[in-house]
Image (tube, rainbow, N blue to C red):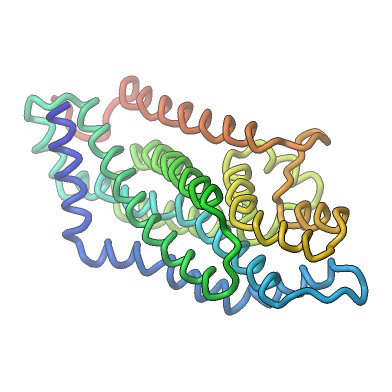
Length: 301
């Protein structure tokens, strides 16, 4: 345990010491938020307004709160995974620079070395994502604040679980990478594609039915839905108190993926948590098995 703690501190310090890597990880969510607000906020707003009954007027603050909630939850749904791929770069950099060879000639076991990368990446990603949460909370407050203490606690739980999932997924993929070129290719694919397949950039309800069925098997879909639910719940309840019919609210929840259906049945939030937590366990176990069974891509002890 002491050796694992030392390796975790070493890896985390190297990440924060690389100012370019740290600030790029930190500034990316801020840039994405600006892009979301610039290009998506009007689309989201028009979508909500068009869903309201004809002639029905609603406070601008409530609409702004719903839009801000969808923007913030979509941003976090992407960042918790993509930042994990960035924070896990040290695993590959050590291979490129040969530093991993120095570590493997010491009495440190391969399993401890592997978990040192994992725990450091998880810790760094969580720190960056929590800072992103604060930025999103400030933005939401400026638009329309309808979050309760319970909502905030659940959002933080969602971020924690999704961070672990992103760390485990990136660790599995990074294990097989040994060059900067491979890293850049994987990073580009993940950054460009993950937001679409998890329903962050565009709600799943806008996808063809066949694609919706495929995406319903992916844990990222349920993580995005949980974030949507907890970030927008208060604003939607306020819409109900303002007189918006329940059928309209249900249609809005369906349209922004607060409600996810599997084989025609609605998936409860408790089931979504089980799927996300189970995925973290499965992917982490896969990372452990890869390290135990696969021939390392660097010199063994």
